[in-house]
Length: 138
Image (tube, rainbow, N blue to C red):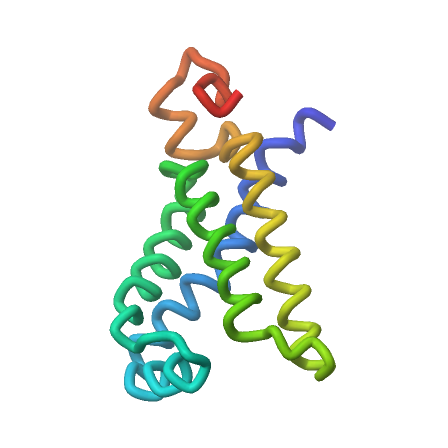
């Protein structure tokens, strides 16, 4: 099973990153509409550039496995905030699904915080003789 660990972690990172890369780009394409959506939920539209950087930048970092623990921590927090700010009407089934999806994705990111990006990552290339989980996070 150890032989499968590196490719499985890579696929998991790519799957987690995908939605954030797509959503980051879509927010650029639908900027004004996204500002309105944010403001309708009590979130200042001026935060949209930070949202785009978090989603797009964080997603790309996770996909590449670069600064993975920090990016994963940021995206876990982002998912929790998204659940609480935009999907708190859990009495409505679609909102409940979005709320629980955001919590689940945050859990996936917390696993990356705990265990790192795996051996098929830029993080691993930067420390070729060290364990992937070698640093302060251990």
